[in-house]
Length: 160
Image: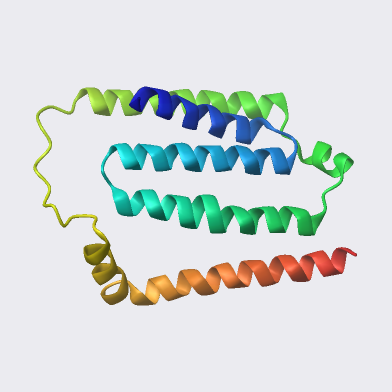
């Protein structure tokens, strides 16, 4: 099941970066997010599973689709923005090199992973760290997302 879900996630991600239509790419990204959420569920990481569904597959994708619809890209504009085959081949070669290096690193890993406490990754432990140690960073990410949405709205209004 792990390999099937991983394959679906990777294929959906590849489909996302090779599509010319932004809407098709966004929907492929949703499939990728859902595949990752299923992998988190298999790894018994309930918090990450729920966050992946709610935040990424839900809220972020609604925001991405809102921006795509707000920009109202036309077919000729999306053709001009499409990557050439040379760029695609270069990205493929770089991806293969990265995969080769990753397999080399993973092949050198030996032994059994150390045991993890039952509280690790739970809602209480993550919330305690997030809202104490990383509170400022958490708030800055929220402000950054707000600035992005405002910037897109301003650019969309100028384009009309």
